[in-house]
Image (cartoon, rainbow, N blue to C red):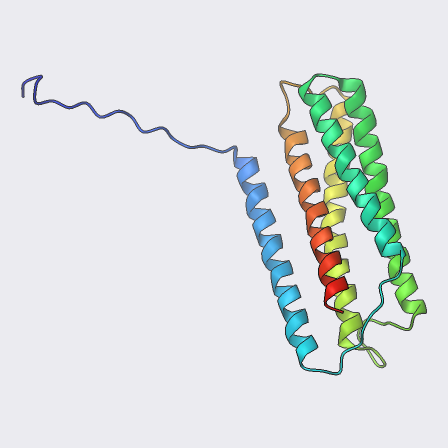
Length: 196
């Protein structure tokens, strides 16, 4: 075969993603599917009647503000890690963790307030409207507990000087997941407020 007839094929660029990032995104998609099914079931069941309109206790608004603040401090930590500002990373991660636990505590206070309002989960005297509020907020709290564990791991790494500009994977993954939890809660909060 002559050189004139030979056409060299350029190698195709391979799109790659870190396997841990890929797993995180698969996990996020699965969580989205869980909550999509829950909110769909909520709408279908509400349309059937016999529905209790649940007034959200004010503590849920406070918890939403707390979670928004934790997202800001998480981003602060990530930006500081990219700039190799380790002292700021430590402080920002600690503050984010404290705000995360505060959110969880305020959610608990919200459930206590619901019980005081005679809104119960399952059993005799309960109503599906109230039960759905517990299930949806409880599922979010469960995923948030995983996020808190992740925050603690990254905070320990930061204090061991394992989070910096040349080692961003852990804090990058944590940042992505934490922002996702924040956006998810805002969606759920607004959904439950609109569809009472």
